[in-house]
Length: 590
DNA sequence: ACTGATGCGTC
DNA sequence: GTCGGAC
DNA sequence: GTCCGACGACGCATCAGT
Image (cartoon, rainbow, N blue to C red):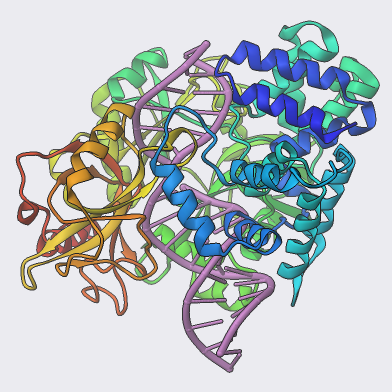
């Protein structure tokens, strides 16, 4: 099979936003793919499952640019400035990426050369597989060589999509759910079968495998896919709603509330003495948390799958440590040392498998009850919970969760149909975070001092904007975060016009930008925007309130999002260093 | 042995 | 993680 | 309601370059 067959599907997908049309194109592709390549098609377009343990390719935009620079003899600087220019220009089409650029380069070069033989799917796939295996000194060079030779044999269109694949973003508007629907139609002529396929995918988490199984053994085999201890299960996610009242209504007037701990989610599998741990995205966490493995080992059951939130805990102060500190535990080396320094607790909140039985289709109430029977006297706790039937106790429980150092609550359906449903499907779980409460005092006003150009669907507008606070003592503006979320397309366009007259070539002397941060464009400090965040964090990067709480650290914002432009504010009216310091102190008192 | 750049994972 | 857009 | 893809801060691993 030619790689061009794949590429032409990509091109078609790229030219439409209609989902039904996309599915048609995918069905056509799947139908003409030989059985032995079906899994590879899936891996090339969606990526391979990470829990299998293969190393990543370890190559993304910058290294792709370096490769292109070497093989076409164009300086890296020139490619980067070209991209910047082109990203600032057009908006209608999505041809402003590195992949398209390579395509045009190839186009020019090929005028004089003989057309290369078309690449095959296996050729491209196996080159990527080979690149994963390179490591150690000189490995980057070898990866670039592999990529360069692939590009050398590629037509302009092939080159474009090879680069997009390497960048890790096809950006054509399809992902797992669309592929599943296409599978159902292609192999069973009945799109309602997507539920069966999705169900199997939830238990196997490898669409390449599912697709091949479907191609070889049909839908019957898919129905037979069952939980295997040691293979992760796709995690159930929570929806969001704006108020506790809405949540209660959605869940039928009553629900269970659980603390939403600020840590990382762990799915633990126990088979006799063998324990494996998975993250939310099904990466292995087994090696990182030997202490968690011990806790699980202590449960007196042979086969078990459960889920919980793993939080860093300060034993002497008897309270949680910030999420940032838990991240010290996500490491490969010195685990035994760091495990003492950052003790960890696991708050268990769900049971998926016990003995020989799947609990996925049991109700929340039953799963929770079984869980509470299991988690006794073995170093584990269940997530704190309460059943509520009205807003008042909801708010009280929420307040308590914040006082106890959590982010908020998860509301869970206690109806009979409240099964464990993988993916963010349905409204059986609804999260409500402290930060959703529209407390005006929680937002901050930042001066915009620069921006980066957007990519993909944001080509032609700013992709992110740099925000700074005002430091009265030094009469200067200190950056504290980038803001990219919360903009509508209209606002984004408005910003282009608004900042056009404020563009400057050289950095304003009153603005302090950390050297790690590289804006595409600089603005003279003028426009103020309102920004909301979940939390103020200690920052190794930003210079706002630098050194105030920690050596060589400033303050930044977790999950910053744009609220509105504040035309009524002058740059000197922005949130000040003192105010930010005050906010940080208040937050840590809780 | 160290630093900076880059990638990739958590949220 | 947050968010908005297209369906 | 679903699905998708724009983009955030931050910590660790890896590699190139010194």
